[in-house]
Amino acid sequence: MVYMYLFPSMPEEAEGGDYISPDRGSVVCDSTAVYRPRNAEESILYSVVAENLETFLSRQWEQDRPVPRFVERELRLFLNCGIPALGFLRVHCDTCGEDRIVPFSCKGRGFCNSCGGRRMADTAAHLVDRVFPEVPVRQWVLSLPFSLRYRLAYDARLVSEVLRIFVQAVFRSLAGRAREHAGILRSQCGAVTFVQRFGDALNLNVHFHTLVLDGVYGEDDGQTLRFHRLAPPSDAEVAQVAARVARRIARLLHRRGLGPQANAEEADSLNRDEPLLAALYGASVSGRTATGPRAGMRVATMGDQIDVETPEVLAGPRCATVSGVNVHANVSV
Image 1 (cartoon, rainbow, N blue to C red):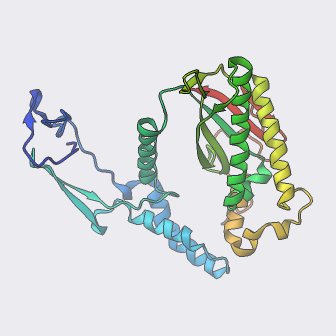
Image 2 (image 1 turned 180 degrees about the vertical axis):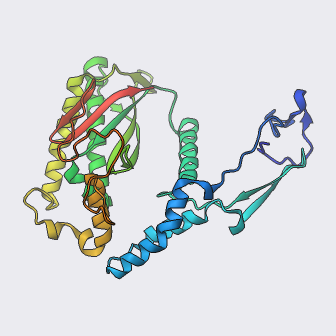
Image 3 (image 1 turned 90 degrees about the horizontal axis):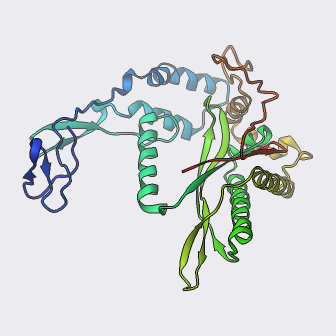
C-alpha cells in the first residue's frame, strides 16, 4: 500500500480502484503495491555493530584511547534506527482504511545505509527537479595522493580550499574553450560537488565528484543569457586541468606549512588530540587493519590485486594523473 497525501475531502474513484485528487489527478492509494518494512535487526551490519560495540568502546577506554563522542553517538543511534519498540509513527489512510507503523530513523550519515540511501534519493530528486537546468552535465572527478587523503579526512578548511582550486580549474577550462570555439568572451559556469569520503572498498579516500554544466551561459545580442553547449574536453585539456590543480595544491600546502619539509608531529594535530581516530584514519587510507589481533596487516579482500604501497595509475580517455592528482571527465548525461 502506498500513501501519498491525506485529502480534506474524499477524492474521486478512478478506473481500477485507485483514487485521484479532484484538482491534481495524482494517485493517492495504489492497492496493487505491497509495503515491505525493513527489518533493521536482521542486517549483517547491525549484527556486527550490536555484538562488538560495547567491547570495542571498553577496550579503547582501557588503552586510554577513547572513541570520540561523535563516533559513539553515531553508532548508538544506528542501533536504534528502524526499531518499532523504540518509537514509531502510525500512518492511516482514510481512503482504504489501512494502518501502518513507521519506526523512527536515526538520520545518521556514517553507518546507516537506510538513512543514507533515503538522503541520496531525496538529494538527487531535488537536484533534478529544482537545481539543474535541462542542459547536458559532465561529471569531473578529482582523486588525490595517498599522502593528502589522511589530512583531508579531518581538515575541513583544507577540503574547501582544494575543492575551490579544482572547480576554478574546471571553470577556467570551460571559459577558455568557450572563447576559442564559440567566441564567448564573458561566460558563466555552474556546478554541484559531492565530497565522497570512501572508496569502493569502504577505505578512507576523500575525493570529489563535481557535476558541471557541459557548456557555459553567455549573453546574446538581446542581453539575454543563453546556454552554449561545448564539445567534450580533449585528453590534453583534461591533462591541463590536472596539472593546474596539482601545481596550486602544492603551493597551498607550502603556504600552510604542510609540504614535504613540514614537521610531521607538529602538522598532525589529529594524532595529538584524537590518537585513536588518527590510527583508524591512517590504517584505512593504507588499506590495513587498525585494531585487534590483525592490527597492521593488509585488509583481506576477495580478488584484490591492488598493491596499496604502489597503487596503479588510473588511465583512460579524458583521464590524467599529475603528481598523484587524478582528474577524470569521461562521463556525461
